[in-house]
Image 1 (cartoon, helix red, strand yellow):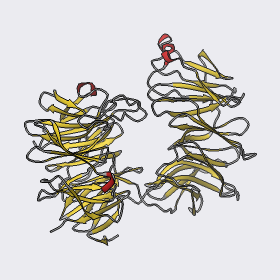
Image 2 (cartoon, one colour; image 1 turned 135 degrees about the horizontal axis):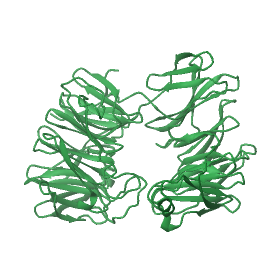
Image 3 (cartoon, helix red, strand yellow; image 1 turned 180 degrees about the horizontal axis):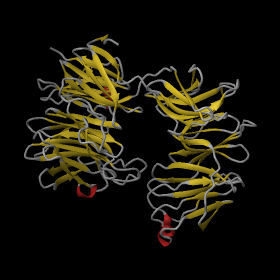
Image 4 (tube, one colour; image 1 turned 90 degrees about the horizontal axis):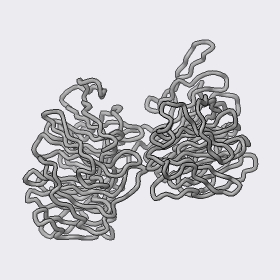
Length: 623
């Protein structure tokens, strides 16, 4: 599509990708006996619809979910023995009857989404939910619905990712990731009982499985006393009637369910045919017949408003580049030609930056670092192929798993990556990478600020770094620090010279911007603007900006400050673009945006580019 001019200097250039992501795919049969494929569709809005595709013709039909998706999406779903498809997200439980091709039940629940779903021997549908071990039960025969609320309290967000019921009606689920636990739930009393003693709990997530013998079995987490005392044994916990018993040598004969986590793919049609692939990018599905050995491929269509853009930056070839997540795609926009290049990317490009003639990527998961040379041909990234372009350098997980900042140091050779740690962990590290040697140092949080993660970074004169932390833990981890802090690090020695919570109560230093004179501008928690003097190590100006401008733009790799070629500093707020007066420290809203600004941001050809959800936009700089 051609660029659309929106007025007031704003333009819309297109979507980063016009592809949705599958959050559960199931092969089944409809009320007319036709093989169909069910796909929960996810784009920047959340899980917006169920797609039903005729496996023979490709004819498709979308069924928008009967509740607001709220940026949430399915993390678990199940096709029941009655041929009804279930999920629970954004605090709503929903039933889709495949035979009738309509939603037949929807009910609001305690927050927020199912991580595990199962069907018990009576045909009841159960869900275990994030973030505080909620339990929900639905009886499809009567329509009775019971929300038991949260049944196990912790001071961190819990992931109850596996769920199973024994033949006596007891429910069991394993939770993680900060500390493992197995919960036995009694539906008669509506209470959950932890089956692991506190001394047995370790980091991780135990898994539970329903056996055909009517009992449920759990794998003891690695590191538990039981596992340590029985090294190398095929040991299980047998769970039955709400009690736990250690058993050895059990051979699991798992009862099959058409259920699974977010990306589950169930390929078997009732007539024996097999769904080989359902490709939302190419809009094709392939079905094989094991009896005849013949496969056929059909095309299908669906609507999509595109995936979230993580962040954009000017690349060395004078294009605006970035990535999307779910699906994970690379894009490059050439403003001169008003043209796009879109490709599959290596995982999720959280934060991007240009240094010289190279474009660097800090990505999730595993905290990987890529280096792209736009002057060379694109060769899909393979971590074992040194000819890849983008070139894979290394991973940093669990020390640094979800990057939030990538700093291109003005020395022209150093790149610093920062972010939060792996699932269930607290305190993220730093990767200090030398582009010339192709090697780097990975520092743990204990060598920086224990229990903190670095959210924002700038380079100071004299070979120092100024970092702003966040108290947020890794996904599913426990917050332990009380306040976010600023710190100064000597880049050569890696020593922390100073640290302080200069803005009391702050939880995250959203972004920082340094000027040539060494003065640093920043935001805390997206709503508090401040000016920091790193020589005197004190805040010289502070202003609460939420009432006037609303919160700043934000994504996992925020780029709130954008500096124009002539040195003017622009600030991206959700509602518009501000300009900073460096003499008075005042911010003026110079352009109210026609769309909500979700992330920044860079300048190219006299325009400030930014993202709004799935779209790439720009604003013409004055003069």
